[in-house]
Image 1: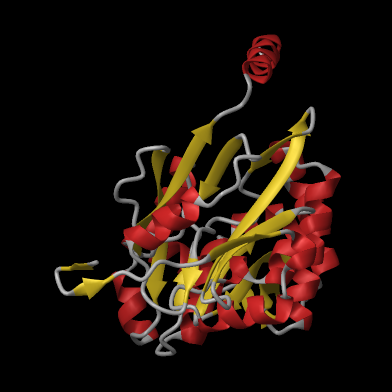
Image 2: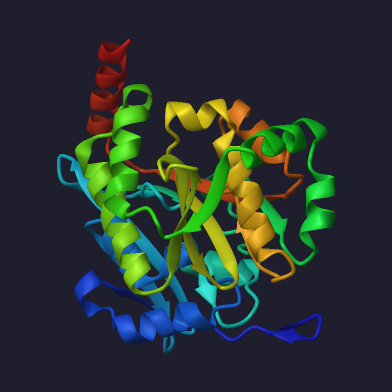
Length: 323
């Protein structure tokens, strides 16, 4: 039926298990998607989650990954894996609320709980069946010269960067994935308490991305070559996504992270790339990123809870015991 001059053609949306997905067609669809991101590639999903199925329309014109687990006594749920800020629906043409609703309605009823993050280009009108929670991301357009970009930074940030420049040098892929993980475990794990499985996931992710030329490790080093800080970025669709980055105590003393991000910005200035800080819900980290004067954009977490009453009861007991 034509509405305001637009004809909506019903899509045939199929649910495919992980084994049924044609990974060649899938990754080609991500390559061509107007809203493509690193997170959506099959190799990326394989690195960060054991199980993921999908919804696919027509001949992979639109796709939606569905990472899932069944940790609550075998009852299936869709969840958002670690190292994966956004998912949702990806497509070759601009997405509208009709397409988004059609895909969400097509999620099989076997999934009793849904918690997933749509991407920045997934409109959320009329999603009455879901609880919607906005999430903030921060993006810095690297089209301008470094001089212009640097002049926009907060004054306090520019001062800290100057201190780092006196002590540090900038390197690309000098630090191995194994070393980056080791630095994180040694200097940060006592604060964040990540399980070994998380480190195995990010190690696999870094090694795979580097082998496919879909990511790089940028680092800052002292004059003697010793490590100060490093960041792994996943890179695709002209977008660099900050994912994992430890600093050592000596690096923190000379503002190594400030220096490194500025060095990356200088290296890619006038390239038209987008530096994706991956936002943060932690206020001090968010304020640090704001010092670079990025654009703040929003994506949305959507939640639907149809767990059986007995699972909800068990969850309440678990939450009580954790107090």
